[in-house]
Amino acid sequence: SLIIFIEHDGTRHEVDIAEGHSLMEGAVANMVPGIDADCGGACACATCHVHVEPAWLERLPAQSEMEASLLEFAPDPTAGSRLACQIRVSPCLNGMTVHLPAAQH
Ligand code: FES
Image (cartoon, rainbow, N blue to C red; front, side, top):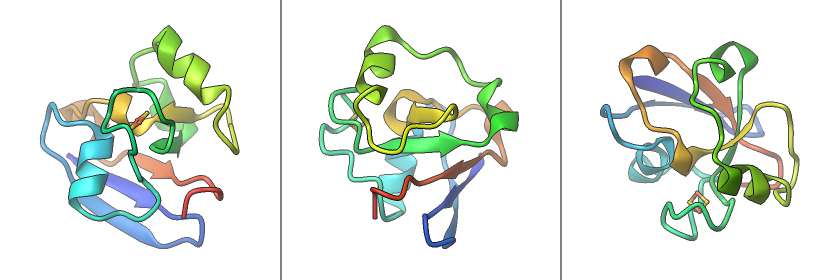
């Protein structure tokens, strides 16, 4: 599925991510800046924080308690805040757009 990452400065990255892989894995494999993923996807660092556009947010599975509690401490929280390592790509997410927080660049 095609996922669009938009950096804080407006730079756009269209990344094709295979079904079952996480948004974070796709971003790292395609060298999208701003997704550091320090913990390697263990839901423990919040350096894969993204802001999901509202239209797409409702298609995502609910946050786990662990994801929600990590996001409480992430800089630049919004209603669309999610951890990219906790989102698995599926065909219904084709075209999803996420923005990178200002603190991650
Ligand atoms: Fe560390 Fe997502 S990669 S929380």
